[in-house]
Structure formats: C-alpha cells, structure tokens
Image (cartoon, rainbow, N blue to C red; front, top):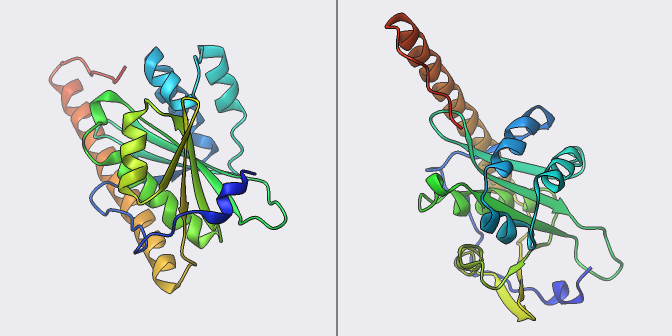
Length: 219
C-alpha cells in the first residue's frame, strides 16, 4: 500500500451523500448493466477511467472479475433504467502500520455529466467506507482527468502529482450512528426511486404498445 496513505488529508467536516441523486449499491445481478455502461464509453473516457487504453476484451475481463462479496459497486440509473454512472470501491489489502484503505474509481456517461452524479457516487462511497471501518479513501488517475481532479478537490482530498499520474487521499472520520442511518436512508431512497422509474417505464412501454408506437430502448 502507498506509504503516503498514513498522512492523508483530514476534511473539515464529513463528506455526506447528496439526497438529490439516488445511488444504489449494485450486486452480481447487475453485471450486464455494468458491462454495457463501460463498453459504450468512448476510447478517451476508457483511458481516463482505467488509466490506459482499454479494449473491449479487457473490460469484459474486468467485469467478469468483479467480486461483489469483497468490493462494493455503486450505480446511478436514469429514467430509462440505464446505468449512467458507476463507482467501484475496491478494498486494499491491510498492511501493518498503515490505515485500512479503499480505492475509488468512477465513470459517468456523457449524457449524465454536469448533474452531480460523480459527486453523489463519491459521497455515497465515503459514507459506506466510514461504516465499513475504512480510514482512507484513495483515488489514482491521470493528471489530465479534469473531472476526477475536480471531484477529488471538491471532496477535500489531498492531491499529489508524479509523472503524469495523480494520487488523491481523503482521511475519513470514524463511523457514528448518524452515518449508519444516513447510509440506510440513502439506500432506501435509491430503491424507491428505482421502483418509481421502473413502474413509469413499464407504463410508458404499455401505452406505446397500445398506440402502436415503437418502444425505444437505450443504446
């Protein structure tokens, strides 16, 4: 583990999840949605997300290798139930003398940018990390990933640059009863929002079928 994690920046106040953008915790049943989300990223977006050129076969391997029992994956769905934003919270191996840490990676489709989705995903991951006794949230990305750099700095992360890469660190306060309630409320709100969108979509599809209109599926 990176030795600098021990000296990570401590924010002036805990980073709270926004109730405006619902964020769900994903499971193995969402593997197809995750794969589709990553495959429709263009070449540059893939490079920014994974730090290198990433062909389809690498993405297939990455998604197949996701261990939902070990790591945590979050997602934000649009009105058509397409996964417009996703974040992978990977728990780093515990090293003696170092704080327990997790690495955060995120991607948002072009149609979902500028809506606070990335911020909501990071906030949700931060609260979950606190409740999971993670002491430091870590982000590694390319220095020209302006969106990620902006997101990290907005969250109060300490950013360090080296050879075209950037490392950002956020020391998390310990969990408390408030964070437990907050995470449960966020998950409940996200599930409720998804159910509403699902019912609305089914209703719209039914009316489209009744009126003889083609049902447009997201690509």
